[in-house]
Length: 364
Ligand SMILES: [Ca+2]
Ligand SMILES: [Ca+2]
Image 1 (tube, rainbow, N blue to C red):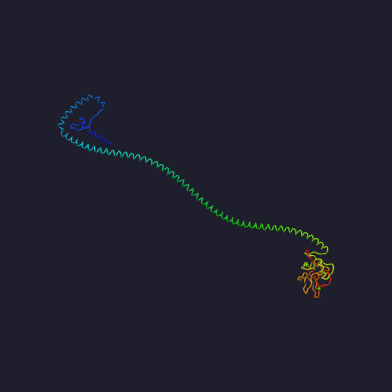
Image 2 (cartoon, protein in one colour):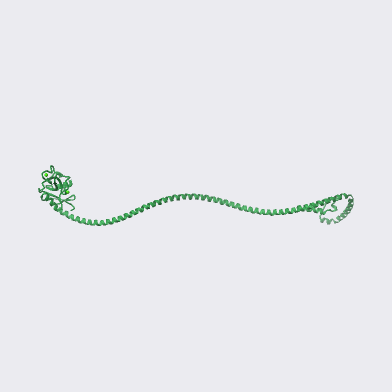
């Protein structure tokens, strides 16, 4: 724009001198009073030509007059013109410099415009990138929230897992204790099983022995039954012969009288001996058996000591009052008259003949 203004000023200087109609009487340019469009000039061309002719005449006269009167002023104007020309040269140089500067400025402006475009593009890219970054930040925030929630859930899950691990550890300890107890119990059971096996072996052996023993017992029972039958037969026979059974012994009072030695011999001949009275009950029984008789018993005084026929010394006795007597009476008998059965023994001379009582074991 400034460049156009510069060119306009230059045209003003190059177009000079101006037309005579625009110059003052002293040669100074004046402003045009009127400028009409070309269409109007055609309409008034005649009047303009006449006026122009008159003006030319007037101008010629004025030039002549002014040439005389305005010569000093003209010289001054020429000096001013030369000054203006010099100024014009300077201004032209300045214009060229300004033009060059303008060219540089234009290049800088172009560069700035290009830079502006680039910066705008970069700004747009930065805005787009910012938008993307904002989105990414939003996504990261959402992801952060999710991760925080997941972290909290993970922490809660971790707490639960820790509790479960603790419970599992406690359960593991209990199971280990139970396993140890089970192992100890198993060891005890194994020992018991071994003992039971050993016991089973022993019991089996004992069973076999018991079976063998049972077989033997069966045989013995058979033998005992047979023996019992024999004993029953013998008992029947003994009863028929007058024997009496009392406390596992058989007793027989003879129907004939004999000396103590003869009676003893007869007792031996039939499988027994003269009676040995071992208890009060036996004394009472023998007394009942001898009622009405005097009967020898198996008691004899040998060298001042009363002994039974089995050579045992007399300990408990049932002598009558004032018995035994010191009159060479060395054999004892039971006097079967009525009265206290525990006061029935008398000593008599052994060669006197009386009845006698034999005793025989019940299992012979
Ligand atoms: Ca006896
Ligand atoms: Ca006597």
